[in-house]
Every structure is written in C-alpha cells, then in structure tokens.
Image (cartoon, rainbow, N blue to C red; front, side, top):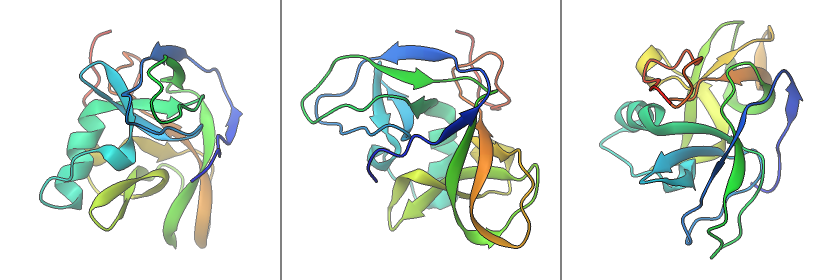
Length: 160
C-alpha cells in the first residue's frame, strides 16, 4: 500500500530506527523492531494463527513509519511512537465504536501494513478507536500503543 501516512492530529514523538536492507517500508506502515531494525508488519513471522501472531506482533510493535525506505536502504527512518498521535486508518469492514481495541489485520498468512481489525484481548491490541464511528465503516481515527514507549497503553510496553 503506497504512501498513506494519514496523520491527523496530536503530538508526535519521532525516533530514528535503521531498516533491514531487504525491507520495503512506506510512510504510514505499521512497523516492529527486529534485532535493532525496523521492519513492516507484512514481514512479521506468522505463528500458528492470527490471534497468536497479533499478540507476538504487539510485543514488538514499534510505531508508525513517517518516512519510507527503498529496497536495499538501511538508513534510519523516522517512526512515531507517541500514544497521543491520531491517525486515520483503514479497518476491516465491520461495526466499531469509540474505545474499541484494534490489531493488525491479516492477508492470508501475513499481517497487513496499513489495515486494522477489532481484537478481543488487550494483549493483541496495538491501537484504539478515538473518534466515534457508527454503523459499518472502513476507516476510523485511532491512537497507537507502542511496546517501546513508556507512556503507551500497550500491555507489553518496555522501559526505554
């Protein structure tokens, strides 16, 4: 999915992270930290089923890419880890409400880089709906919970 940052409001907390040389990251991608490098959600290793994979991803979820990285690039890119930034994100078609927990959606046996879906358990969540939606929707405004931000609501948040 090409270049859909869709930042809407709130304070941004950017960090710089190097990128795995074989990874292709677009602005707006969900990224995780893998051995010191940022990688897109689509490269996350599938584990048994969606619920297990979402929980493992939440444990390593870094944030939202603000810059892209071409194939072969390893230069650091800016990633937003702020729990107060608001983004408009694609959702799996369904009925959603204010406060709903969200995790990355799936595409067969991989995670999607710019689409979310409802999750039942906090351990699988990386985002929450912050703008009330009604009926069947395909987009909503959300905040994210990085596992690497001490101000985050991510149950996996780590110091530093």
